[in-house]
Length: 100
Image 1 (spheres, rainbow, N blue to C red):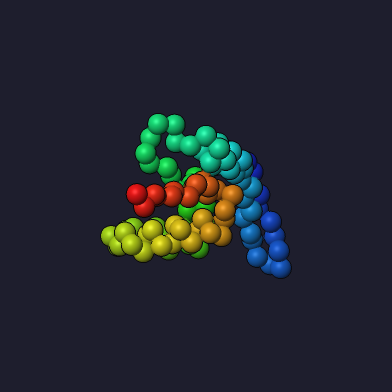
Image 2 (cartoon, helix red, strand yellow; image 1 turned 120 degrees about the vertical axis):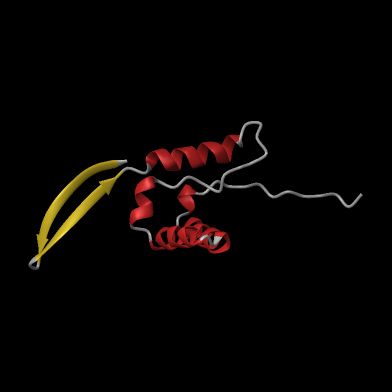
């Protein structure tokens, strides 16, 4: 969620500085990590704040891949985002299969 925007003059350049709140996405990822998906077999990779799609390099590349129709590249870049920002990722438990 966008909290604040301000224009700053630095070295003759105008810079727009945005302040965002990511606590909701972190809280949701933590909640799903602790409680699971509650009866669903599908557990999300994580929760990405909408504002991140505008400035994060991995998500910008994922968006370009999605527009080009390349699902593999899209998934690759989203997974890289979650490696760089683990606070948004859902922790998944390992699954073990018996050999019987």
